[in-house]
Image 1: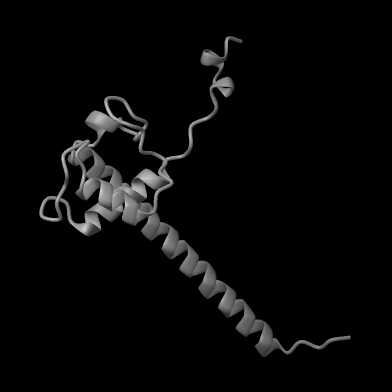
Image 2: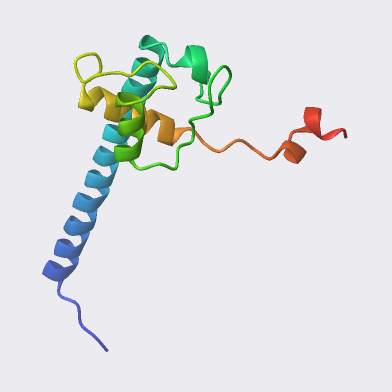
Length: 120
């Protein structure tokens, strides 16, 4: 039979509690970044071509994106398909927030899973 000292249990529980608090804090930071990114997506008129959820419309679908941030930033900064946004217009921090918003948009369901479109 293994004997566990109360001090060991307290340390383990304390470490677990710290990890749980850190996880909640990181999740809140991520939610705030996504929320700020959505506001910037709207404020910078991205929705006019890409739709409110980045689903496309007058321009290509950009959400959810599979591109790494560096590729996304290059496209936004150096493009001939849309107006390029220089760092003077859209800082790297703000561009990162828009990117996090676009990454957060869930994949839409398959057409066959949408009753109004499936013919059922």
